[in-house]
Length: 555
Ligand code: NOJ
Image 1 (cartoon, helix red, strand yellow):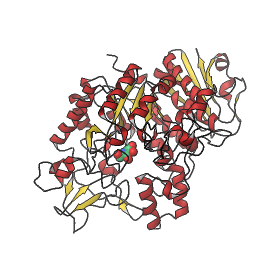
Image 2 (tube, rainbow, N blue to C red; image 1 turned 120 degrees about the horizontal axis):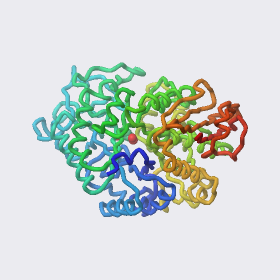
Image 3 (cartoon, helix red, strand yellow; image 1 turned 45 degrees about the vertical axis):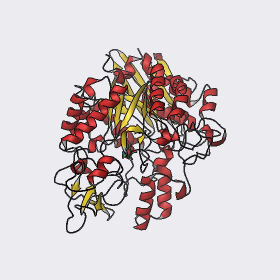
Image 4 (tube, protein in one colour; image 1 turned 120 degrees about the vertical axis):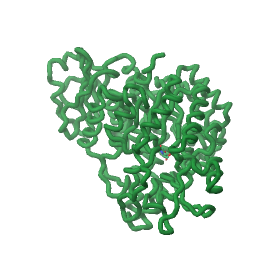
């Protein structure tokens, strides 16, 4: 077994609800995915990460699971799943499942039993606490608004839910819970899946003192210091590794809210005792914000670069990075970090791809990123479907923390629904996503931005991404080269080099819509180097044109 194939891989994330609908009910499904595997093969990715497809009442689009070993009805059947998996494997594509085990749905039979009585055998599968002075056990707020505790009158106790009240947190202190989770994971591994993306895995161990958190916006206390990277998280992951992960040839990535460099070195230690890599969030949070994540402010390149360079340099030789701009929880990268106007959308999408894919780590592409899909910019609250966006709008406007205009503007910039509009396949009605009524509106720019037209245009973002992926396969330096930041004070250019033996790779990206001077291209060695990729026609000037990206290999 080549145990580190995941270092050479490029991963494509599918959000199944919005990818492709095969039966006209307006919701993407497994057969829709199977029908588009050749498209992904053409792009050149190696692994597909599938957001949850398990049975779920869909309070949080599948991140609230009521049966870990059944497929959500809207998505198809277990036979459809098996066929999809075998079609992936036939094409040499691997499959990563989303593992959501910080919490279940409140409709999971474990929880339905647990809430029945204090002596139910499932009681201790969840985190139950007595009221404090007749109220919630502490002041923690939930990620999707309101308190993190829900009162249950049946037993006069509260249960913990870090997300919605339909997502009760599992009690990982309970050995039986861990065993149930590990058995379920083994069942999927024996079915042939190739790995797991572990949802908020950094949150599975809570501070046993359950202390009050610092209050924000006069609402609730922040629980993150007490639920992220908790006292037993590494012990649990080591146990998971021994009992499940080490027995199969898998790729594992932990979604690690609140992770620091020091913690990442433990989660993704190269000794292989826990996970292969983690998703860190620091570069997603570079815009300072008074009210949680809700702002429409633009980022500053200096801050973004400082964070990414820190992760590149400090994990060197210690742990492996995951690289991403986009996923189903983030706005579209080209709208957030690039320029989604007609003039620069494609150029800036290619520039962002270059900047990320030439770094050290495993790159992730989120569906639609490869054709430069943009934010939805919904104008009405009724167009939103995301529980986080809708609840935040209500909580912040009702408590006069932000006014409706400010909140709508923040939603346009950062709502998760920006990434969840249907995949734009072609210019037919509903972008070829469905023949029915889509569960969420299609971005009206689909006649312009769609996969069919991208495949017909040899200069498209799609073929550029295809080339980025191919370069990674052909150049060891992209995988193993040591990262070194350059021009670290520049306001427009993000530049770095990668070094492997005598070879160097120079990467320079202009994040602005101006032509800027770049003296990196004036040295003799760079002049003699070989341009591997650029989003402009080859030129020798020591400048970077608007959103230009250039990669030069120096032998
Ligand atoms: C992180 C997932 O990516 C997000 O979509 C979900 O809402 C939360 N975890 C809760 O499961």
